[in-house]
Length: 160
View (spheres, helix red, strand yellow):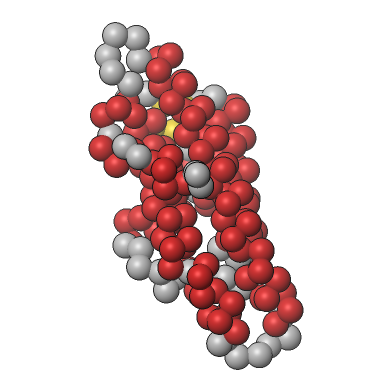
């Protein structure tokens, strides 16, 4: 299977991971994220993309696995948009007062825009991977066309 070692892709994956850890799955929001109806394998795929880059940085990413990780993140984005954002303020307000109340409220206030940035970064990685995939596929069909879960992925991550 093709391995992706493109420095631009690796930089984008690092960027998406940093953004995810700092603005999406931070200590203030993680308890609410874990309440989302997302299966363990999806969470595992999200973690591989956003937190485990050291495992792949030097050997490269398997293209099909990278597509699946992006797909998992896209499902997360859709689920968070539909099931968390509409009532995030009330959910965050239900957490008992703490010294970090203002920071928690700021994280909640910025969540929708941070989730949008995350989605845009995912889309950028996806589009770059598709181009690499097309160029390297020669006579066989590109990998992304063979992975069913990728059909309609951009609809999940890009707001129209």
